[in-house]
Image (cartoon, rainbow, N blue to C red; front, side, top):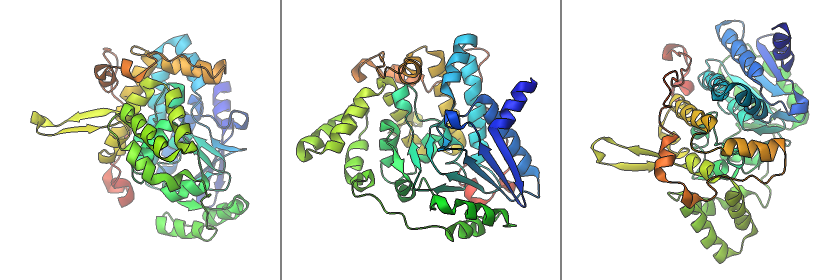
Length: 398
């Protein structure tokens, strides 16, 4: 027990500085991948700081070349092999509870995204009030290549990107740089990495939780970020035409029509990326059917799209149901196969089953959104939040 406590404290460093608390994710050799112990420690600290009147804001950053490359899914897989699917479910329950606390936090969280920020790393940053990108930032949600789906509340924050850019990012796992993150709204500020120490000092001296004041302080160190000539963000018209389609099959057909018309290498690469991903992951990532009462209206929404009309809590609750079904492997073992091929054996040749989109029935996809049929299973229980103590920008997320 003492070793575990020491580990979680070593992997999340704490610096108390005037009115701010600086938390540093400290597993640089693992690109700061989040272990269960790290998630538990962050949850403990954020809860304590919310009750401490001396703490005005919380900064979160990563040691080394990554902010955080995601959750430690290799450890999750080993835990499931050793103790069953509930071990994996417990990891995601704790992680999603932390994501919800950050999304509804009463004090400003400033995440310094100076490096890789992927998967679960986005869960501990995108829900916070301020996300500072740099020239070193690399964003991605690569879950469909692993047999998973964009989780950690991604159906909330991706669905709020311009047009159908969130569908594109979530299905393809596309990587975005700092300038692209700022342009689409994933980042709130762009600061050159050389100026980050000055930002930290200025924020530590700010005796305020007012987001306007915090933002103005960061603004003093911002520089204009320029999109590269070949940035994917300049292809929003093509992305909107293709990724607005109702199904994954229709998205692929639209892309194939575009490549005939334009002979664009980026479109061809996007098609190949989708074809390499887990077909099951693509379908459950996109699709979530909402049938309104009396069937007066049938709204075909999707995992990312339905997030547009749901609060962050509802998104996380739905994603928890989905991830429990994935951990159980009752409909597909693609998650375990993806982790084997990409993270363990590293042959990068996963054998998906089912192997084709057309082999996956709508009824199978529907099951991922249903309650787990296990007498001991419960829906995600999120931390209780009082609207009376939350700022307006947080209440809007509920």
